[in-house]
Every structure is written in C-alpha cells, then in structure tokens.
Amino acid sequence: MWLIIALGVLHIGVMTSVYFFGVQYPITTMSFFLCSLIATFELLKRQLKRHQIILQSLDHGLQSLRDNDFSVSLNHQKEKSYNPLIEAFNQTSANLRDERQRLYQREMMLDKVLNASPMVTILVDHRDTIVFTNNSAQQAFELNGSIVGRQWTGLVNSLAPEFQHALNHHGETIFTLTDSQGAQQAWHVTNSSVTIHQARHKLFLLKTITQELSKQEVATWKKVISVISHELNNSIAPISSMCHSGELLAKNLDEPRLNRVFNTISGRVNHLNDFIKGYATLTKVKLPHKQPIMWPALVEQLQTLYPFELLSALPSTSIDGDLAQLEQVFINVLKNAHEADASGKISMNFDTTAHGLEITINDNGSGMSAEVIQNALLPFYSTKHSGTGLGLALCREIIEAHEGKLIFNNRDQGGLSVLIILPLID
Image (cartoon, rainbow, N blue to C red; front, side):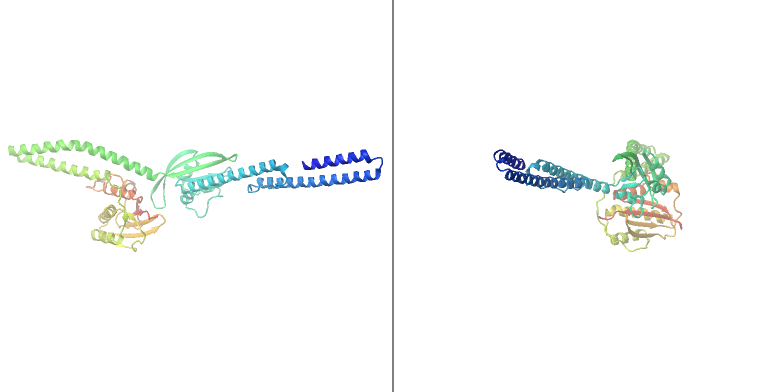
C-alpha cells in the first residue's frame, strides 16, 4: 500500500513539473524526470525482493510439509499485506502437527494393546511379506529374531501340517497341535483380507482356546455329575428307608436269609452314597487360598507319606498357592507312581523355566497307552478295578485353578513322567 502511495505522489510531482516548468527549464525537468524513473525502479526492485523472500519462505514451508515436517511456521510481521496468507499457512501447519500427534498417540496405544494381547496378530502384504507382528506371534512360532520382513509362505511351510492347513484356509478354523511339552493345544485361526493404503493385505489372528475348552469341558462334567448325583440321591433315599424297614421286619420273622439280603442291600447303598459324595467334591472345589509355598516343609511331608528321590535343589523362586490343595495333588500323583512302580524308585525334580516352575515326578512303571494319556484327566475314567476316575480329574481342576498345567508323558527309558507347571510370581 505504501508503495502505491509513494509512486502516486512521485507521479503527481513529475506531471506538475512538466506542466509548469517543462518549457522554461527543459534540462531541469528532464533531470527530475530521470531521477523519478530511477526512484521508481528502486522502489519496485525493493518490493520485488520482499515478494521473493515471502515466496521463498512459503516454498520452503510447503517443502517441509511435503516431507512430513509440520514444525515449520512463518514469521513476517513487517509484511502486513501478507499476514492473511502467512496466518493461513501457520494455521494449516499447526492443524497438521496436532493431527499427527493425535495419530501418533493412537498408534502408540494400539501398538501397546496389540503387543499385550495374547492373540497372535500377523499382517502380510500383497508381496507375501510379513509387515507386522506382535509379541505373541514371536512367542508362538518360537523363532530366533523378528519374523517381520520374512516371506509368509516360507514361514508357513516350516510349520506342522495342521498349522499349514489352518493358515491356508480362508475364514475361521479350529485345529489341535501338540506343543514341545507334549500337551495338546487347541487353536482358533481367522484369515481375512484388509485394504491398507489401497493395497490388499492378509490379516491372521490366532488364539489358543485350550484353556477355554478345558474350562467348558470341566463345567460340562460338573453339570453331568450334579445331575447324576441328584437323580441317584433321589433314588437312594427311599431305597435306604425301605431297606431299614425290611431289616426291622426280618428281625421279627427270624429269617437269617432276609437279614443277609437286607444287609447286602444296605452295604451297597452306603457304598453308592459314598461314591456320589466323592464325585460331589469335584463340583465343589474351592478357589485356591494362595500364600507363599514353603517347599522344605511340603517336600518333607510328602517324603514321609510316599518316599521319593529328590534330584534337584528346592526352588528358590516364590510360588503362591493353596498348600492343602497342592499337597493333595502331589499325594495323588505320588500314590499313583508307587502303585505303578513296584520298585519304588520314584524321583522328583524342580526346574525354573520361562514357562514357570516345572515339577517332574518320574516312575519306572509300564507307562500309559496313548488312549489312557488322552483320557486320564477325565472324570469317571479309570484303569483300576476299584478306581473311581476322580483323583486325576481333581488334580487337574486344582492345577488349572492355580493357572498351571498338568501333563503326562511316557519316558523313553520306561515309566511315566508327570509334569506340573505352576506360574511364577510376577
């Protein structure tokens, strides 16, 4: 604005000089005219330089925005004519900076959630390259180093056939896999397609559902046992009452054979009643009352009841558990080991690993068949003539209530190995 005013005043001065003094003083007028031209050129040159500085600043600012650098801002307070443009640029830069900060915070939160999730998450791009995994994926595949950047097909081909079939199946599928410890793990796999940055990607979500299935299985058994117990109790009560009445009548009749009949019926009813009460304990297992386990006292007590050889030092790591419940588990396992191994060469070993505290109890018996190992932890299942199928099912319930695992494996040198895994204190 000031340049326009200055040029206008100069133009008026030149025209006035030419009009009044052009004829009388031509040289003076011409000199004044030339000076006016020079002054005009200088003013235009300065203004052009200021324009170039502003445009150069805007160009540098836009280049920074293209390079995702939103920290830049312009400051030209002296050039008030450009203030609206500069303010618009600075506001745009500030908005982009704030939006990037919000996106960064959301990405950080999403990254923490995905890495803390037990669900395995794998993202594969259209070039069959793994572009994202979470911590659970690294642990699930048990590979050294990151799998990001590896070819997905090559990784899948290195896995077990069951794993390959599930991962190559589009949609949802469930399969069972035997882990390195000999335990069967049930997995739920989801294979779906997603579009990211206008490119097709494959998203794989894997979740172990062994614990959920185990809990559902136990809940189903408990319901079955409750229903059976209820129906049997409804029948046992009148049978017991009628048997007692029959015994009284038999005494008056003085018939020994009737007394033997009613005594036999009464004995079997009492046995059946005790049988039902035993299974009722499985449905009423209390939540563990956890406290630090004192291993020396527990091991000494167990060795008194069922002798065994301790192959390792007692653990120094802290374990929280219900002492009475865990003692019941060890007693059941050691009792079974002594019944299976007539030599009595039972051993116990403690080992602290990444999975937790591993307690191994070995015997030198005949081991178990594959069918027995598969069904050993189920209620009602027993290979013993007088067994109820309750002991190991109760052990399983107690160990899983402690968030642990109970695993059976046959030893290569003969005998059975029972592995009890208890979680460490965080």
